[in-house]
Amino acid sequence: MCEKDPGCFNSKTLVLDTNFFDQINRTVNGEIHPYTLGKSADEQGRIFLKEVHKVLGNIAQCGGGRVYTSAKVYHDEIDITKLDSALRTADEAFDRFCMEEEFITTLSNSYQERIHIEDVIEEEVQELDASLSENVGSADASLLLLSLKLSQDVDVILITDDLALQKVIRDISRRGEVVVGGSHFSTASLHYMSSLSFFREIHSCCEMANNRWMVVVTSFFRHQQERYEQGKIAEETYSQHLSCAGPYMAQLSADCDAKRKYEEKKQLYQMFGIDNERQN
Image (cartoon, rainbow, N blue to C red; front, side, top):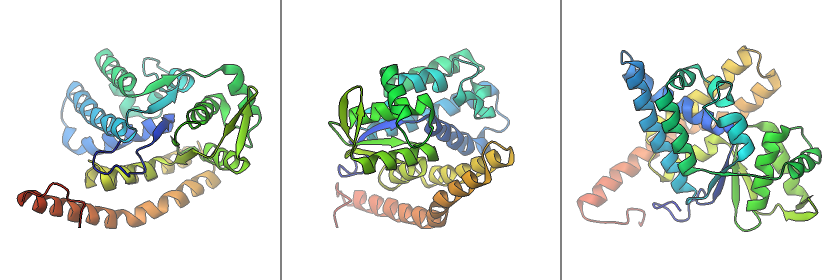
C-alpha cells in the first residue's frame, strides 16, 4: 500500500514483465552516468546496485508486498546468472556489470526478496496461448495466466511495454472470462499499464525525483529509436511506441513543475508542524 496515498492506483497486486526490468536498468544507467564517469567499474556497479535497490523497494511498496512474475519469465529471461539472459543482452552497460559475480549475487537476491516468482502449469500456459488473438509466446502467456489467477481475488495490474501482450489483455477483457484447464476465470479485475504509466504514478505520489522521471521518459524514447535503427522492430511498431509515449514527453515539464511545487509545499507544512500535507 502506498504510504503517501492509500488511494493510489498502484496500490494493487503487480505482475512484472521482463521489459519492465529493462526499463529500470536503462533509467538507473542514464541517471548515474554523468557522475560515475572516471570511476572504476566496481564503483560504478556499486552505485548502480544502490539505486536499483531503491527503485525495487518503491515498487514493492506500491504493490503492497504483492509483486509477482512467473517462474518461466524469471528463469528464461530475467535470471542474470545466465549469459544469454534477455535482461542482460538488452543493455550493454548492464551486461558489463553482470560480469562481476558479487554484482549478480546481490542483484539476484534483491529480485527474489522483493518479487514473488510463481510457477504456473505448463499445459495450461499452452492452452491459454493457443486461445489468444496474438502470438505472444509461452513466457508472456505464463505472465497472463498468473495474472488471471491472481485477479480472481484482487485487482491485478500487469506492467508491460509489449504491444502484442497489451492487445491480448484488451481482447480477453472484452470476452469477460477465459476458460483454462476447465476453470472459468473472470477478466473483470485484470488490467495492464505501460512502464511509463506506472513510473508516472510513482513520480506523482511517491519518492521519485524529477531527474529520475525525466530519465525514464527520455531513455524509453532512445531505446525504441535504437531498436528501430538496428532493425529489431518494424516501423509500424516503432510508430506505435512513439504514439503511446508522446503524451508523456509532452507532459514532462508540467509533471516536474507540479512535483517541485508539491515539494515546496511539503517543506512549508513541515516547517509549521503540519503532518498531512495532502489536505487543503
